[in-house]
Image (cartoon, rainbow over the protein chains, first blue to last red):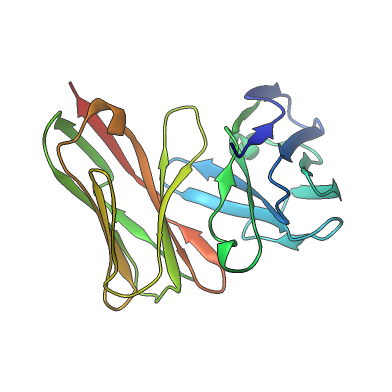
Length: 114
Length: 108
C-alpha cells in the first residue's frame, strides 16, 4: 500500500522560530510537493521537486524553503515563522509523465504559530 | 490563472439521498482529478478524467467531464455516512489548480 508520512500531525511554534516539516514517501516517486490548505482557499502549492536536489517554486513560496537530499524525503522549512503561516500543510508525491497530477497525500501537519 | 469553482460549498443530506456537486472553470484542462478528504486526513485520489464527455463510475459515485473539458460533476447515489468528507476537484494543464471543495455531510 502506498504511503506518504509526515513528521508531525500537530505543531505549535512561536513567532520567529525556525520550523521544519518533513515528509517521507515509500513509493519511489520522482515528484514531491508541499501545499498549504486554508478554509475557502483550497490547496495552494508552495514548492515542488521533480528530482533529488531539484526544486521549483509554486504559487506561494514566500517565507518558505525546501530541501530534497534523498529521493524519498522532502522537507519544508519556515525560516522565521509568522502567524499568517498558521495552516494545514500537506505533502504529496507522484510518478512522472502522465501520472504527475495523480498525487498521493500525507495526513497533513496542522501548524499553529502564536 | 486557472480558477476552479466548486458548488455547493456545503451540503448536508440524509442517508439514502442522491446528490450532485459541481466543479467549474473558464479554462480548458488536459485532465481533472477528484479527491475526497476526511477530517484530519490528507486528500485521497478518487478518479482522473481526461476525455471530454467522459463518464467514470466508482461504485455509487459517477464522475463526468464536460464536453469542452472545462467542468466536471460528481454524482453520488444513495449517499451513506461514510461518504462524508470534503470533495476536491483539481484541474491540470501546464500546472494544477485545486478548487476549495464541497463539504458533504451525510446524516444517518
